[in-house]
Image (cartoon, rainbow over all chains, first blue to last red; front, side, top):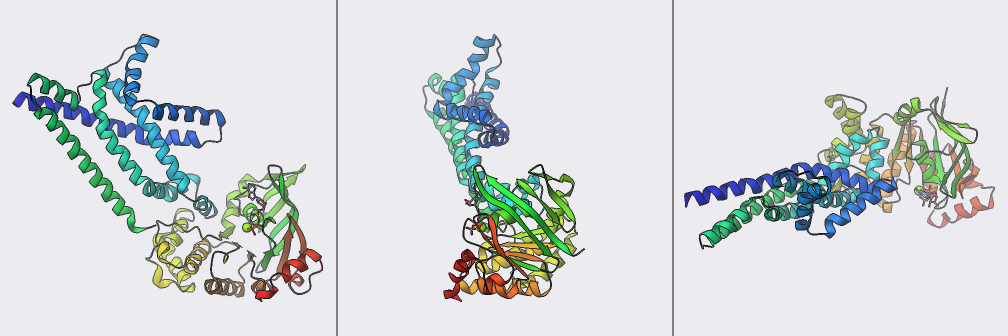
Length: 211
Length: 252
Ligand SMILES: Nc1ncnc2c1ncn2[C@@H]1O[C@H](COP(=O)(O)OP(=O)(O)OP(=O)(O)O)[C@@H](O)[C@H]1O
Ligand SMILES: [Mg+2]
């Protein structure tokens, strides 16, 4: 039993790595993508739009396979599964976060920018001190949903052979003719998402002091 | 040097539509000018150009001796070096208040003082509290905008603008979002500022108020100044002005 738990712990660590690394890169990158979608430079807008359409319009599984095999077939390069997996997740989630940010940015009335400008704030000051806090408040619920989806999506990393928790659990369960490992994995996703949703509920509550 | 605003030949188009054509007027220090005219006549656009929310296409504007833009070969050329300085001299009160919802009333009034004018917290808060008291809002300092009535919110936004010590304050229909009761509150505040010789330009549909406080007045229609002078309220010369003014008489 001990080696099984140890394996599952390793799988859990991998799942958590995928989760945190994806957030680390795609949360800020989503802003860049959102900017691209909102720019007045048309070619940039078109390309950004196409990218978002592809990311939202095709399965993440397919994107994982693409990012793992494409560099090899197209350029003769190969890199490790884990890196490929992170790249695919980041590219995919940046698109989703971008759409969330864009909606949030557009929900802030233009008058907020104008009030900032008339008072003498720089654009950057207005963005970080006036606009961004309001964006964060409006997008909190959709962001929460997306992060919960990410927790569950980490299980897809096994498609390209990354030994995340669910793969470890499946392997163990067929080896030992037992559903216990799968059950343990399920418990992990549940607990993880319980924590995530509590955190988001807490954040929403904290931002509840204004409308 | 008592001239606050000197505007000559201002023109502006949005794409194909010409919104302002050859607008000229002066405002001296301590004067109040009212700007009246039907919807779409370009009143807001004019204020937004002077407060640098929009760019002029052509014309020359001097604010308190600083040239913001100058007409050269039919185009307004901006004097970059003066943009910020002029910006600090001009304040604008919006129809929809545009208070910062995530800041308390106090912070709404201190934020720019601290970030832009680099005043200390104590100095900014003292100034804010004095202005809020003047607006009858000293007990609201810790509240958030959503907890206030529209009239109170507009008074906070006036305090926020005044905290920057502008040389001239512009109002774009400051009471249009308010019901008559709250409108009176705001008109009272603006009247008190006029009595202190605050230089102001007010876009308004409150004709009696405009007549009572104005040293200057312009009537705009279709992007041009049709008629100017405080006589437009009592003895309009142009047919268009007369029609516009008389349309307000019923609610006198
Ligand atoms: N950003 C813009 N793009 C295109 N057209 C605009 C823009 N802003 C204003 N306009 C047009 O310019 C004209 C003048 O608008 P403006 O808002 O200055 O009028 P106004 O006199 O303030 O009217 P109101 O009394 O309704 O506030 C209108 O026809 C309006 O549709
Ligand atoms: Mg207007």
